[in-house]
Every structure is written in structure tokens, then in C-alpha cells.
Image 1 (cartoon, rainbow, N blue to C red):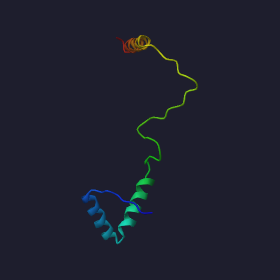
Image 2 (cartoon, rainbow, N blue to C red):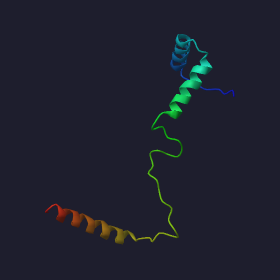
Image 3 (spheres, rainbow, N blue to C red):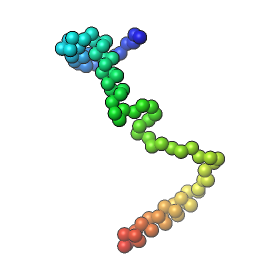
Image 4 (cartoon, rainbow, N blue to C red):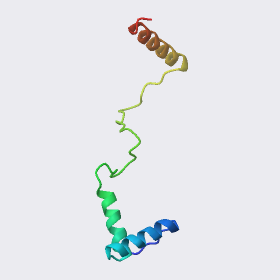
Length: 86
């Protein structure tokens, strides 16, 4: 398959130099480097790696008013402070 890549000049020169050193056509070097990067351990296969997985909710989640949420948060802060001996 043919495609066009817009590469910075310095990267293109580095790829050309490396291909010449290894005695490979540029397209083979680039294909090999891409395969290597895609199969590297820890490389994301799909989705967004920076987002934690989210379980789907059944039905609709209960909503809280702002005041209720503030009360819960305040209660949690007080509970945490007591656990620290404050």
C-alpha cells in the first residue's frame, strides 16, 4: 500500500542514513520500525490509555443536588480529619 507521510526534514535524513547503514530500502526500514513500535510491550492496542475503564451503568444513576454533594464531601473531610486525630 502506498501512503504519504509529512516528516520533519531531520527525521527523514535520519531514516535515510539508517536505511543506508543497514542496507535496506527506506520503505522496509520504516515498515520494520512501525511494526516494532506497534508490537512493543505496553503499546496501547486500542482506546485511550490515559482514561481508566468505565463500567456501564444499568438504568440512570441517581443525581444529587449541589448542597447534598457538599454535605457528603464535608462529612468525608470531617471523618478523615478524625481518623488523623484532629
